[in-house]
Image (cartoon, rainbow, N blue to C red; front, top):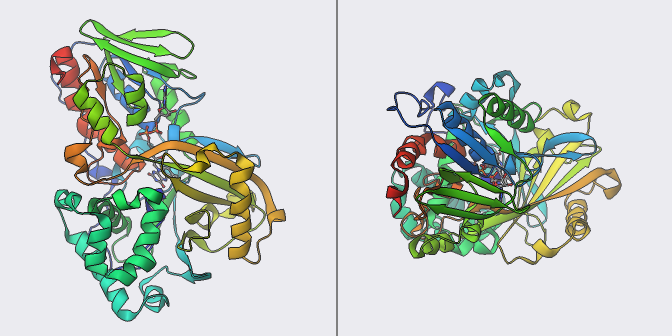
Length: 482
Ligand SMILES: Cc1cc2nc3c(=O)[nH]c(=O)nc-3n(C[C@H](O)[C@H](O)[C@H](O)COP(=O)(O)OP(=O)(O)OC[C@H]3O[C@@H](n4cnc5c(N)ncnc54)[C@H](O)[C@@H]3O)c2cc1C
């Protein structure tokens, strides 16, 4: 089984899917439907990633006067684009799963449903200096680094996790302990540890078993019933076309969007809120909703009280440095190649053109090399050349037919806060609430994704599931501060 996206630069063969995929019709209705009348308010939405953009749209659709503040020159955040060799495409790789009902509903709403294309992919595994295909159950059974017993235990672990409905009890045990118990030490060492490290780097020992559970649940949801290979969706034009269409909707709905509007301070009082920008502008509103990453919010919101600050500090975020290469010819037939050898500086290879027909990219191949990092990693201080050189050298060693001369263009993208690590007792100890303790200041962000991994669909789910509660809290105003 192959895990499809950034949350899953993990790929394993596994038993067939248990859950039928959702259709767009499965998406819950928007929270605006049937809500009681509410007083229109002026609202600042801080952060113009997908979550902030969709939230701003929903609030404007329910009559509020919304100002959206985004620090970058364009909206979209992690789903934003870059230009590489004249090709405009996502700076971080994205796929859509059949089970991503909310994402598909959003594409429908934006008139982009026909831009969603589907394809099957293969998965590779680079381990002990050799490349293995691990795209179906047969290949998994042949996978040399594991004995038959190991494979049974691995399959059993995945199956057991897929049967668990209440992930909360898994939050009490570390992923490593849980995996050792179910899979045994060899599978832990050969498969799970490299995969955990690939996602969480040095934060891997901090993850609870709920993290693995969430990944496995999404892997299962990714599989079309009866199909032994994944069906992945890609958006023709990349997420940039979604962001552009969303921006047009925001403009039409009367949302005032400010780009290059980096927030340096957020303050809230009973009388209203103020967001101060780096250029000194002050944006006042009755309410403010932050969609900023938790550590950024905590750093700009000086009025956060002790409990809110303690919870924010308990959130451990994971970052990414991601190399993109546009190369003359395909590297491999695999969309995801999981890399378990520790000398390789990246932890996976995502070859977009193993999914998107290379003709779409003028016959060239687009490859991403993700390096997931904790906050204190030395790579944050390194320049592009220092990041690139060892990555290209490693790719030459892994793929003897690949030479650096084939690289047409290379880019390095960095995001300091990509996801909140599912630490032990995360929901109890760290997960931020809607109320911040600062009057009239609320937060909605991906750190509130309780039962899933970071992806666009879960991000949209945060808005969908909490919008009604947010609107009620906004109406109640400063009384909700806890
Ligand atoms: C490598 C990678 C691969 C991925 N692959 C997939 C995939 O295959 N499928 C999938 O569905 N999802 C994928 N995702 C996840 C998806 O991109 C995210 O779920 C989604 O984009 C998160 O949106 P967000 O608005 O919550 O966060 P962000 O995009 O982080 O938005 C936060 C916004 O706040 C802004 N901001 C920060 N500080 C300030 C400040 N001080 N002032 C003003 N603005 C500020 C930022 O610029 C940003 O725009 C991937 C993510 C990554 C990193």
